[in-house]
Image (cartoon, rainbow, N blue to C red; front, side, top):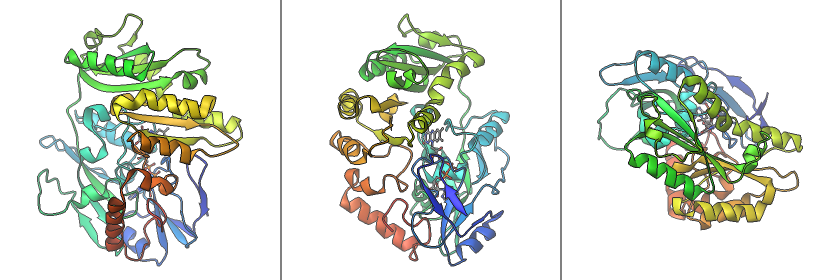
Amino acid sequence: VEVRDWTGRFAAEAVGVVRPRSVAEVAQALASGYAVTTRGGNTGLVGGAVPATSRPTLMLDTTLLTGMGPVDDRSGQVTVGAGVPLAQVQAHAEAAGWTYGIDLAARDSATIGGTVATNAGGIRVVRYGMTRAQVVGVQAVLADGSVVDEARGLLKDNTGYSLSGLLCGSEGTLGVITAVRLALHRPPRAPSLGVVPVPSLDAALDVVAAVRRTGAELLAAEVVDAASLALLGESVRGWRLFIEVADGGAAEGLGALPDDAEVGLDAAARRRLWAVREGMTELWGRAAAQAGTVVQKYDVSVPMVGLDPFVAHMRGLLGDRVGVFGHVADGNLHLEVVDPDREWDEEVLTLVARAGGSVSAEHGIGVAKRPWLGLTRSAAEIAAMRAIKAALDPRGILNPGVLLDP
Ligand SMILES: Cc1cc2nc3c(=O)[nH]c(=O)nc-3n(C[C@H](O)[C@H](O)[C@H](O)COP(=O)(O)OP(=O)(O)OC[C@H]3O[C@@H](n4cnc5c(N)ncnc54)[C@H](O)[C@@H]3O)c2cc1C
């Protein structure tokens, strides 16, 4: 069967697809003698869920691992099967009077297993942290078929290495995640959203700081640049900042915003305003398709003080081939490059490294960024990663060629 990723950039042949319904069936797949590529919702953006070597590879599709336990109202925890889509977990938590700390535009398809395996970020990181911060414990099947189960609900358990911590962000290379115990939060007060034009990222960060000084609970701070807004037919200068606070929906937390801010208080107005930011990944994908190519995606983080100079360098390098949007309060920018003529990985990611940043802020390494891992992780760090991989997967059957060279 042919397997293709969401971006259309990566495709490969797999010998077949298995859809286990239980931990035992996952272990059976790992004993098949084939290499195994694990796939959840297939919304990953770095090609990590597509076979990456010429070895005969089985696709292990987790989407039937859909068990979902009750929300425990005393601990604020819930156990969820790896294949449950993020949006279903959000709805399940909300129905029980809680909220889940992770939100991203791919919520209807991205699975909990996939978000844990990639340590996904999204628009709520500024408030609740990355996925790793939501994980109480992970249940997983290791390469030899053994099962590790830290999804027992123990918030405190300092008995040696945290295997769950290791599996977060492991991109399917250390084990197949089968279930996750998640920590939930009490829902914030009703949110207000402000959309503000700003001339620079520094100015955006100043607005964020002013809003935070009021004591308002910051839920999100996102930016979109003029090149991205032009895809919607809008002609603007500078950037647009989307800032959301939990203030009871009265906009009192947004008092620090400049006069030209547009404010959305009710759910419909907020959805309409957020749609612009949330549509960006797909919009750039379409722009690239129209140019007869696929978008070159760079999900990078840069120290906050260096954001504007970094963007200026990028625009100097790429001109109108680049659009930028992202999670400004995390120092995380998504650069979308449309160029049918050549790839820009080396130049872009070298500039990221020079700026003291990371070549992957939240999407992971997959195969797309594998050649560049050494730009922002040291030789000692990569050697430690290799030692862990060799110890847990000596036959190299789990996602070979993803994250580390096969
Ligand atoms: C429109 C759009 C918006 C997005 N926005 C964001 C964003 O804001 N922030 C962000 O961080 N990401 C974002 N993403 C990327 C993507 O949604 C995340 O990386 C997500 O976590 C992937 O989940 P998935 O279930 O689709 O995983 P897949 O794409 O199926 O797999 C991703 C990786 O995880 C591994 N994997 C999947 N399931 C398991 C498992 N059960 N056990 C072990 N390994 C597993 C795969 O082998 C692969 O390496 C976006 C994607 C799209 C399309």
